Amino acid sequence: MCGLVGVVGTDDSAYEAYVGLLNLQHRGQDGAGILTVDTKRNQFALQKGSGLVENVFSERSFRALRGPAAIGHTRYATIGRRDPNLLQPFLDSHSGIAIGHNGNIVNCYHLREDLLRSYQNITFASESDSEVILQLLSTFLKGESPNDNETLFAAIGYAMSELVGSYAVVGLLKNCSIFGFRDPNGVRPLFLGKKEENVYAFASETVTLDYLGYSEIEEVAPGEAVIIPLGGKPERKMLFQKSYSPCMFEWVYFARVESCMGDTSVYQARFQLGLILAEEIKKRGIEADVVLPIPETSRISAGAMAEALDLPCRELLIKNRYVQRTFLLDDQAARQLAIKRKLFPISQEIAGKRCLVVDDSIVRGNTAMQIVKLIKQAGAKDVTLVSTCPPIASPCYYGIDFPSNEELVAYNRSEEQIAKELGADRVVYQSLDGLKRALGQASLCTGCLTKEYPTDVSHGSQFEEQRNIDRGKSLSESL
Ligand code: SF4
Image (tube, rainbow, N blue to C red):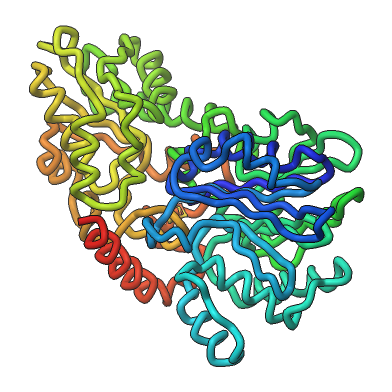
């Protein structure tokens, strides 16, 4: 999962991209990059580096990152976390095309082999699937810059016909046009906004465009490509459309609560998730004294649930805000250590209480297990662990780090077995139907819940194997 931004039509393009990335920091903390075209020197200017956005760029950066168009990327690694070669945007200097990509290409290893076999002069600087997208565009264009929008649309259409997986892409051409496109299932989000005459921007989330003062915000449709020339208006073309299947986890966990996805605000979706779970708690006759949100994502749902159950909602797990989100740490030991450092219970308020502990989701179970332990050690009389997301029991091939089945706590286990594994008195999961009702979407990707993926995932095992090899590599590099 990554964050994307693209801006055209303002001399502040790089700075806007920077502020945009700050607003997308939650989508990836491994590294960030911004690329512009310096029109005076007729060349690209690129800066990227590891770490948080505000540590990668300084005031000095914006003296070099000049020009009326920019694209930016903030990275969350599912593979190759410590490899700086994987930071984006990627630039192909032959065709003068640069892209930033959010998502995962399931058949990337297969496509890479094909490209290497078919074109002698191709080299890949990294293992990134995003480079495969860039090479598909570049080889279709025979390494030359596209002269008109039709040629670029054709190249994007060709890439879409080859790519299997999830992708939202923003791109920049040497003539300062920016472009964006989204996979035919719309698994990953991409939005377009207008600020003033001929000033436009793309972003992964509406909150970014809102913050930067863009209005007339619209989704780039699944399978659609949009090209915006410098000084011109967007030209939009539907290239490939399949069933709309946005990732349910955007609403549940990933997106900022101020954002809107599809027709439903993330806030409203999380509120509804809480209300629907309250119905379930009542139905099962579970009694409690207090609702505890696990900070931060579950707060809205916990508040709604408490309201519906007529219970107090109390912040009794205090977060050390300087510790990274555990979900984004890429190995087991690092995660466990981070959880311990991350949350602290207020024992005086917890002791003797029956607690409904609300988390957005339970993936491997490490976080949940540690939290249940903390709450029990704080003297809770009874702990019900409530997940706003249904059981995650299958991997994600589309950019979220849900690992192989065996690592997922819900895989092949009943609710009772999961509760036992996690040390809770019971667990209550959101139902699939409840999730769909809360998110208000006619269709969704629910592959990790139901094993029904919106694309072919027959190359998924190759992808998973590579991910595991890579994980092993990055762990040994860090030791
Ligand atoms: S498999 Fe799950 S996490 Fe992955 S895109 Fe689909 S819904 Fe999202």
